[in-house]
Length: 246
Image 1 (cartoon, helix red, strand yellow):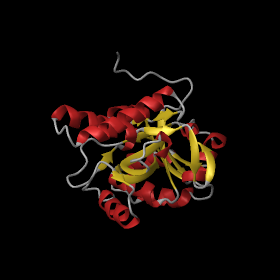
Image 2 (tube, one colour):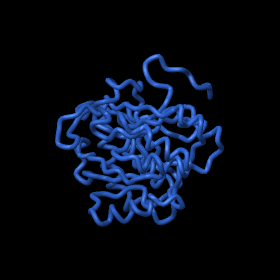
Image 3 (cartoon, helix red, strand yellow):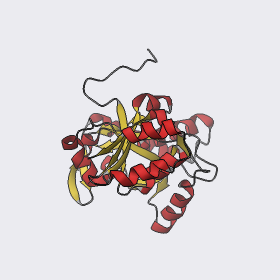
Image 4 (cartoon, one colour):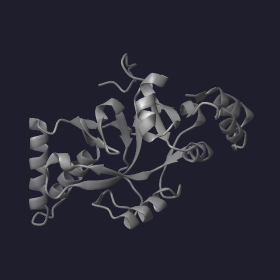
């Protein structure tokens, strides 16, 4: 096994995070890092009675070639403001592709049965091996996604997103690894805490930034924000060259 990055002939060399407004992108540039968010995932496709909607602390990226016709369906769902970071940066920070699952497959059946077995054993087997197994299953749930399903009320092919996720193993004390069936108020409270850089910041350097996306006609406001960064003139100059209207 090699630690070297191998260039893909099918996908981008970068990972892209999109948002519906510029604030999160400007904040990331200001802080030189991305804050996490509790993202609600519908895991009912696994057919496990105890598992429905679950929120995990994460940052999501797509691995899509950065051409407008390729990115547009993704931006229609998640927003037209984005930041690209090198895949080499992602590899060093443990950003990982999700596992797309066909709900009717033998793999999905075995995965579901393993979860059910863990639920039945966890109360009676409070041992280190049992806890390790449960932690492993939680991690696998956090990276599980159906091939297709409902997204914002429409039928959607999740596989098209080529999604990668960062999910920390060392989340701050008092912050749960997952929130089953989270209520709105609880979710908002935990999210506000996660959005604080002191809780967790996935750091990057300006050299890791590959692209900064804005909608057509909005480059000037982003360039102004770059001028106000606490950065060297050379860093600002290089960042400005990466601003793309799309």
